[in-house]
Image: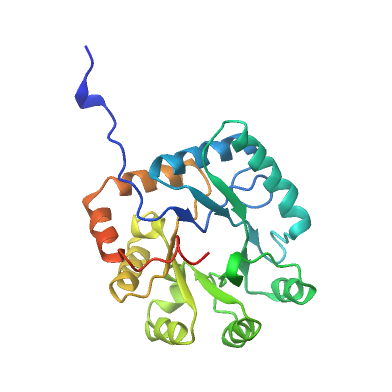
Length: 245
């Protein structure tokens, strides 16, 4: 006899349809290593209501010095794996650019792949803010780019200086918060800061920042929670995921 009590509940539909931050391009950063497991994660995103994905491999000095020449062939492998399954999803790529000297050299060489509309996902070091952070982001805006700061809630050096978030926002920088942060995947302090940014109306984009199946499990658990439904209500009409590009 079928046991209804053992049936796994389906997670709530996610409150956006475009993921702008995930690490599914195989073999070039600390995300997925092979195309087929990456395609598994794409399929899981589709069950949540995601229909468009921008893969964003790391571009980081000394560790993941990716360029279009390394990203594009690896991305083609992901697309082939997903296409072979007939998964109904739009797949694109940009990158997550660490603000460092390598990024500045790539920018000068024109080896940057922004999102449509010249949006660009950038991240700080987790150790300290880049010394030229404000100037570089100002220069990006002068060049017609629209910087999106990845997971500002994860930079611990801002936790005791919340005014810094206000300064960055007032400089015209967009914020992308991780669903994993709101789900409490990292730690309580990161979750608290992420929720504070939502309450202040400073969250422009959500992203999964998904690297592997454990991340997907955590997101699915969160999507099934009352806490998530409350968050989705708070963000209704504010997110730019589906309208910016």
